[in-house]
Length: 518
Image (cartoon, rainbow, N blue to C red):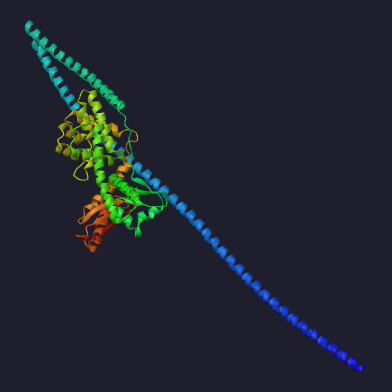
């Protein structure tokens, strides 16, 4: 029993030791598992923290983007407000200029009235002196008449009665002259009202933008060309600005010269229809379109002469007349304005008993100088008078073109009628807007200034006058000369012209070599 108890006790001790060892192993495994789980939890926590950080960064960026868009919207609204304020200021400036001109006119009239009153006062003083002298002489004569005989007294009395009748006759003449003047004024109003009622033409306002429809938006890429060579060649050949943006189905052609813009629009439509768009083809199509435009201008001039019933015009005058279709004055189409003035002048002439055919001829050609004012020196009245005289028009037509702005004393009644018809046509509600005329004049000044430099072949004002593109003669100028030319033009624009913002000057110099294989 003692041996058995020993082994039993030993077994129990060994079992207890084994249990303790097992428990230690189990505790260690649980510790390792807990440590792994803790590490996994830490890794998950790190990943979640990284995710939260990224979401916070994204949220911060989105918030910054929203704030930036809000700020951009506020800036754009401020810019629009500034542009509106500028337009309002420009309108107010134009109104002030008109008021200043009216004040100057009233001052001149006031000075004229003052001079007239001073002359009348001087004449009245002289008459008073004469009356006083006559009274003295009459008193002396009375003293002498007291000693006159019957015949002598009768002669003195008849002489005095004759003088009294002469004064009464002068008063009657003045009275009838005033009545005749009032009658003439009333009759002139009736004549003008009748002419205006018998002819009322619609007035047009030209724009500076044309749109060209394209079949697909893929055509925009072909119009632009590789690295933009096609669009550059097209803009260089036509002198307009082509805008290719995200607007579906159209391409915008913009330019202040209506002839150039129409040529560019037709040429671009031909290129889109043809499908072959490359620099050489572009130059060919633009050249063909320019020739077609010249023929179109002649047809338009002939149609205008026929519409106004003015036959027998010289071919050159018909061509100049057709060019007026692409010219605006204060946004009023000059050709339609000339036709309207022709009809009004003819009606006014017939109302007062003059030749209506001569009146229509004078009215149709009164602004012909505007078609050549970029080719000849002087204002359009002087140019128009020179052109009409050169091509065999009668003196009434020449004088009407020269004096329809009241710059000189009228020599024929037709000049007065043309001036009246011109004022009627220009004063129709909505017929003219001065802002567009100023805008076009500024672009013309830009082009004229650039063309005045030696070595310049062509100059085009684009981007609404914010850029002037100059085509330099590669045979006369080197690259260094072109760089100097660019600086000189920019300096001249800055010193001589007035413009909003800034004007970009781009000088293009290209050397082109052409050979033929035969």
